[in-house]
Image (tube, rainbow, N blue to C red; front, side):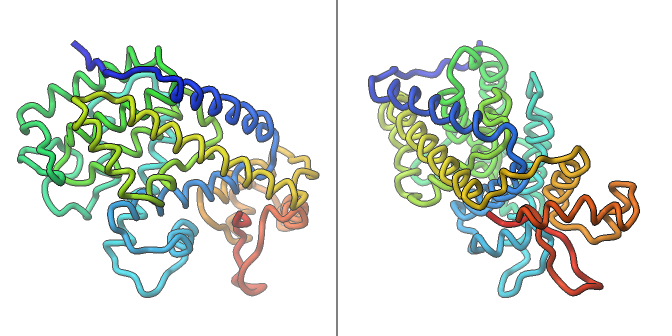
Amino acid sequence: MSYQPQFSITPALLSLVEEIAALRERIEGASVALPWIPALQKDTRTRNGHASTAIEGNPLTLEQVRALEEGREIVASDQRSEREVLNYFAGLRFIEKNATRKKVTHEHLFELHRLLADTVMDQGTAGSYRTIQVQVGKHFPPAAADVSPQMFELLEWWNGASSKLSPVLSSAILHYRFEDIHPFADGNGRAGRALALWDLYRRGFDSHYLFSVDEYYWEDRPAYYAALTQVRESGEDLTEWLEYSAQGLKSTLERVWLRLQKFQAAGSAKITLTPRQEHLLGLLRDHGSLSPTEIWKHLDVSRQGAMNILSPLLEAGLVEKRGTQKTGRYFLTSS
């Protein structure tokens, strides 16, 4: 028997879902052919990594997280804080690679948790359901013996019945239920938010990976935790949590739209990308930065050929070079 969430579709929730659908349609329509998508994806990954780890107390600033994403060294930080952020980037890449997976299993959750929690757990083992009782504030999650059966029910619901709901609702339900079960000894907050994002990817809701809902949660953490707690206080009625989550998603999409306008104002839309330029932007997004030699090798072109590919991207402001003539590297321009 799979999990059966309890909630009501209130007029407020219905209105939010409709507004979100309209915003998403506007963003998708505007961004499908935009050459700056890789830069926006990189920026979103940075914001996700910063916000989700900051919610759990990570002290790194957004700019420090951006530096880590680009492979640059940062000062005045500790190794654990850096590792938490780098782990989260690894987790995001994992769900991006598995965005179209039809069925998610326990093993996929274990792999995601291993990536997120490697070397930064205070208790338990990364990639394994907990064998101890834990407490989250005043909440006592299910006994360890009940974790696997309840996760089995949740996965059955996620792989099946959840598809009948709007992804606005299914991602929020998955997020809450995962946190309520608290299946791992540590790292559940990051994992639960990553799963909610994965659901949006699986459902094709965020086809370009531009949405960073965790920013909304991080900016008012007390409200985020209160919204989660309220579900338990209302006898597992998810209605208010769904309204809260939908408001967060709406706010996120409004921000994405404003960022798109910023890129449009910069005039980047005038460039028409060649396949090799698209490939290069994707490489820069995934690697953080590349040296001229690395670009030649990846694209299998001569030095002059690489410059012919790079020059229009530099002129359009999509790519920037940092460093000296000899040691300089190319980066996607930060949004």
